[in-house]
Image (cartoon, rainbow, N blue to C red; front, side, top):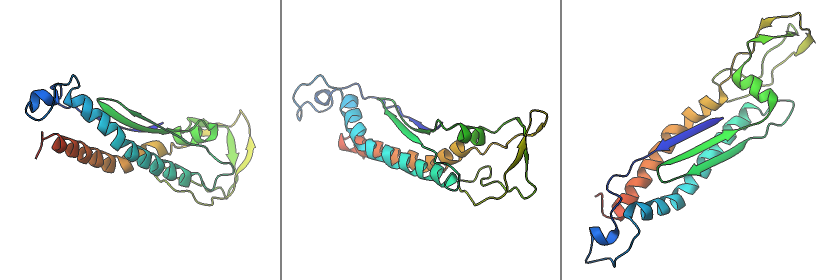
Length: 178
Protein backbone atom coordinates (compact mmCIF):
# COMPACT_ATOMS: atom_id res chain seq x y z
CA UNK A 1 0.00 0.00 0.00
CA UNK A 2 1.29 3.43 -0.90
CA UNK A 3 0.26 6.40 1.10
CA UNK A 4 0.87 10.07 1.60
CA UNK A 5 0.18 11.11 5.15
CA UNK A 6 0.01 14.79 6.08
CA UNK A 7 -0.36 15.71 9.74
CA UNK A 8 -1.05 19.26 10.81
CA UNK A 9 -1.48 21.06 14.10
CA UNK A 10 -3.56 24.17 14.47
CA UNK A 11 -2.66 26.05 17.66
CA UNK A 12 -5.17 28.46 19.18
CA UNK A 13 -8.09 26.98 17.32
CA UNK A 14 -10.04 26.15 20.47
CA UNK A 15 -11.48 29.69 20.71
CA UNK A 16 -14.84 30.54 19.20
CA UNK A 17 -15.34 33.25 16.59
CA UNK A 18 -17.23 35.26 19.21
CA UNK A 19 -14.25 35.11 21.60
CA UNK A 20 -11.88 36.33 18.89
CA UNK A 21 -14.15 39.03 17.47
CA UNK A 22 -17.01 39.72 19.95
CA UNK A 23 -18.16 42.84 18.08
CA UNK A 24 -18.58 40.90 14.80
CA UNK A 25 -19.99 37.46 15.70
CA UNK A 26 -22.91 36.33 17.82
CA UNK A 27 -22.14 33.81 20.60
CA UNK A 28 -21.53 30.30 19.30
CA UNK A 29 -20.22 27.07 20.76
CA UNK A 30 -18.32 26.06 17.59
CA UNK A 31 -14.60 26.72 17.78
CA UNK A 32 -12.59 28.31 14.98
CA UNK A 33 -10.78 24.98 14.64
CA UNK A 34 -14.05 23.08 14.14
CA UNK A 35 -15.20 25.57 11.52
CA UNK A 36 -11.84 25.44 9.72
CA UNK A 37 -11.68 21.64 9.79
CA UNK A 38 -15.15 21.47 8.27
CA UNK A 39 -14.19 23.90 5.50
CA UNK A 40 -10.84 22.16 4.95
CA UNK A 41 -12.55 18.78 4.60
CA UNK A 42 -14.66 20.20 1.81
CA UNK A 43 -11.76 21.97 0.05
CA UNK A 44 -9.19 19.18 0.46
CA UNK A 45 -11.51 16.48 -0.88
CA UNK A 46 -10.76 17.60 -4.45
CA UNK A 47 -7.01 17.59 -3.82
CA UNK A 48 -7.15 14.12 -2.25
CA UNK A 49 -9.06 12.74 -5.25
CA UNK A 50 -6.65 14.41 -7.68
CA UNK A 51 -3.55 12.95 -6.00
CA UNK A 52 -5.22 9.53 -5.74
CA UNK A 53 -5.92 9.53 -9.49
CA UNK A 54 -2.34 10.58 -10.25
CA UNK A 55 -0.97 7.73 -8.12
CA UNK A 56 -3.37 5.27 -9.74
CA UNK A 57 -2.31 6.44 -13.22
CA UNK A 58 1.35 5.85 -12.30
CA UNK A 59 0.68 2.32 -11.06
CA UNK A 60 -1.44 1.48 -14.10
CA UNK A 61 1.39 2.62 -16.38
CA UNK A 62 3.73 0.26 -14.50
CA UNK A 63 1.42 -2.67 -15.28
CA UNK A 64 0.05 -1.70 -18.71
CA UNK A 65 2.01 -4.37 -20.65
CA UNK A 66 1.21 -7.18 -18.23
CA UNK A 67 -0.80 -10.20 -19.42
CA UNK A 68 -3.62 -9.43 -16.98
CA UNK A 69 -5.30 -6.29 -15.68
CA UNK A 70 -4.36 -5.16 -12.18
CA UNK A 71 -7.06 -3.30 -10.24
CA UNK A 72 -6.06 -0.52 -7.86
CA UNK A 73 -8.15 0.99 -5.09
CA UNK A 74 -7.74 4.56 -3.82
CA UNK A 75 -8.64 5.29 -0.23
CA UNK A 76 -8.64 8.63 1.54
CA UNK A 77 -9.12 9.69 5.11
CA UNK A 78 -9.62 13.24 6.30
CA UNK A 79 -9.69 14.02 10.02
CA UNK A 80 -9.21 17.02 12.26
CA UNK A 81 -5.46 16.39 12.51
CA UNK A 82 -4.40 14.59 9.35
CA UNK A 83 -5.14 13.77 5.75
CA UNK A 84 -4.12 10.49 4.15
CA UNK A 85 -4.28 9.35 0.54
CA UNK A 86 -3.46 5.69 -0.05
CA UNK A 87 -3.63 3.26 -2.93
CA UNK A 88 -3.43 -0.52 -2.91
CA UNK A 89 -4.03 -3.66 -4.95
CA UNK A 90 -4.96 -7.16 -3.87
CA UNK A 91 -3.41 -8.71 -7.00
CA UNK A 92 -1.09 -11.58 -6.03
CA UNK A 93 1.32 -11.21 -8.96
CA UNK A 94 1.57 -7.45 -8.37
CA UNK A 95 2.40 -8.19 -4.72
CA UNK A 96 5.28 -10.49 -5.72
CA UNK A 97 6.69 -7.93 -8.14
CA UNK A 98 6.13 -4.98 -5.76
CA UNK A 99 7.66 -6.58 -2.66
CA UNK A 100 10.06 -8.94 -4.40
CA UNK A 101 10.80 -12.52 -3.40
CA UNK A 102 13.74 -14.15 -1.65
CA UNK A 103 13.95 -17.15 -3.97
CA UNK A 104 12.59 -18.08 -7.39
CA UNK A 105 11.75 -21.68 -8.32
CA UNK A 106 11.48 -20.94 -12.03
CA UNK A 107 14.02 -21.18 -14.81
CA UNK A 108 13.60 -18.39 -17.32
CA UNK A 109 14.29 -18.61 -21.06
CA UNK A 110 17.64 -17.25 -22.28
CA UNK A 111 16.00 -14.26 -23.98
CA UNK A 112 14.10 -13.21 -20.84
CA UNK A 113 13.86 -9.43 -20.30
CA UNK A 114 11.60 -8.22 -17.45
CA UNK A 115 8.81 -5.77 -18.25
CA UNK A 116 9.52 -3.55 -15.24
CA UNK A 117 12.51 -2.31 -13.26
CA UNK A 118 12.98 -1.19 -9.64
CA UNK A 119 12.13 2.47 -9.02
CA UNK A 120 10.62 2.96 -12.48
CA UNK A 121 6.89 3.61 -12.98
CA UNK A 122 6.76 2.32 -16.53
CA UNK A 123 6.36 -0.97 -18.31
CA UNK A 124 7.95 -2.17 -21.51
CA UNK A 125 7.22 -5.08 -23.81
CA UNK A 126 9.73 -7.49 -22.24
CA UNK A 127 10.55 -10.85 -23.80
CA UNK A 128 10.94 -14.50 -22.96
CA UNK A 129 9.28 -16.11 -20.00
CA UNK A 130 9.26 -19.17 -17.78
CA UNK A 131 11.01 -22.22 -19.23
CA UNK A 132 9.97 -24.52 -16.37
CA UNK A 133 9.18 -24.50 -12.64
CA UNK A 134 10.64 -26.92 -10.11
CA UNK A 135 11.01 -26.90 -6.32
CA UNK A 136 14.57 -28.17 -6.88
CA UNK A 137 15.55 -24.87 -8.56
CA UNK A 138 16.64 -22.11 -6.20
CA UNK A 139 17.55 -18.98 -8.08
CA UNK A 140 17.82 -15.44 -6.73
CA UNK A 141 14.35 -13.99 -6.17
CA UNK A 142 12.55 -11.15 -7.89
CA UNK A 143 14.06 -7.76 -7.07
CA UNK A 144 11.44 -5.56 -5.37
CA UNK A 145 10.11 -2.88 -7.72
CA UNK A 146 8.83 -0.56 -4.95
CA UNK A 147 6.12 0.96 -7.15
CA UNK A 148 4.20 2.19 -4.09
CA UNK A 149 7.17 3.98 -2.57
CA UNK A 150 8.13 5.52 -5.91
CA UNK A 151 4.66 6.92 -6.66
CA UNK A 152 4.18 8.22 -3.11
CA UNK A 153 7.51 10.06 -3.13
CA UNK A 154 6.77 11.43 -6.61
CA UNK A 155 3.52 13.11 -5.50
CA UNK A 156 4.26 13.92 -1.86
CA UNK A 157 5.90 17.32 -2.44
CA UNK A 158 2.98 18.62 -4.52
CA UNK A 159 0.40 17.25 -2.07
CA UNK A 160 2.09 18.79 0.99
CA UNK A 161 2.55 22.12 -0.81
CA UNK A 162 -1.11 22.26 -1.81
CA UNK A 163 -2.23 21.33 1.72
CA UNK A 164 -0.08 24.09 3.23
CA UNK A 165 -1.56 26.58 0.79
CA UNK A 166 -5.06 25.42 1.68
CA UNK A 167 -4.40 25.75 5.43
CA UNK A 168 -2.88 29.22 4.99
CA UNK A 169 -5.91 30.31 2.94
CA UNK A 170 -8.22 29.14 5.73
CA UNK A 171 -6.14 30.92 8.38
CA UNK A 172 -6.29 34.13 6.32
CA UNK A 173 -10.05 33.74 5.98
CA UNK A 174 -10.56 33.75 9.75
CA UNK A 175 -8.00 36.54 10.23
CA UNK A 176 -5.28 34.50 11.94
CA UNK A 177 -2.74 35.02 9.16
CA UNK A 178 -1.99 37.94 6.85
